[in-house]
Length: 135
Image 1 (tube, rainbow, N blue to C red):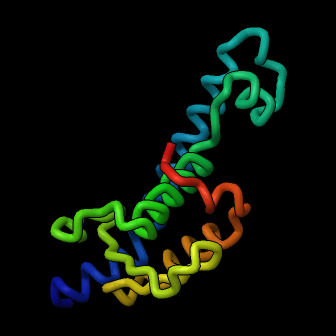
Image 2: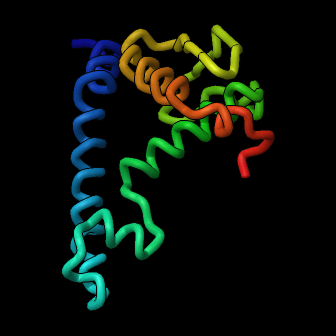
């Protein structure tokens, strides 16, 4: 196998599993450590998070992804460093209707990522999509 084929296969087939496993492991640590607050110990995990004003790591990752989509849509990236986009994916918006977007990438093996980003963004409520700034 040549290095180009290896990289494509690794990025498409291996790295997503590793990243998922890491997220799951971190989530377990957060789940256990939130029980250290004595008054919250008996509460379900989601309730402990609410009481502590914390979010799951899956939510934080999705929120981060949506922030990056917002930056891409609103041309907040310097084109000279476009290869530094999150997860090494160069995304272009092919439908700049802010309510409904679609992406193309420079890498064929990121079709799943495109679908996830597109579905997540397109499911956001209008008041979130229509914000004027990242803050």
